[in-house]
Length: 89
Image 1: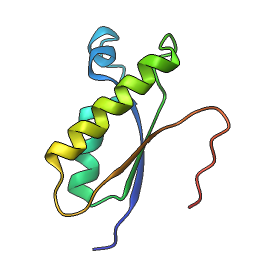
Image 2: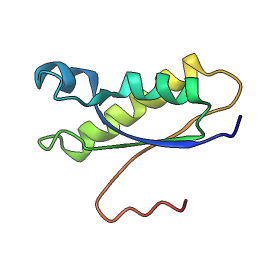
Image 3: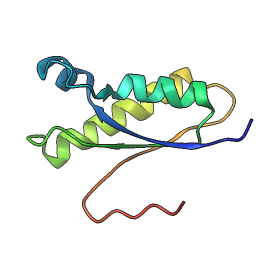
Image 4: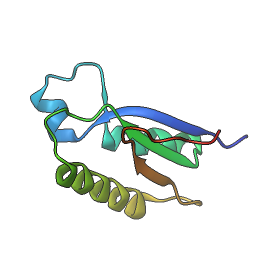
């Protein structure tokens, strides 16, 4: 199976609940989906607009920790998108 990069719009779990879902994935589902798909990278985007940089950094750290404790064979690279970010495909 070819490894893929998945880019998902995710909210931190608490944002997803507060906003009533809105059809977005949580950071937890993002990690699970990438692990099941054998993805190499998860780039989280479409953050809650009221979250400051500190909150996004905390969500990123929590998401990386989740990946670490649920990791299968290969590590998943997790990043949080930001304005002007470029990703080489």
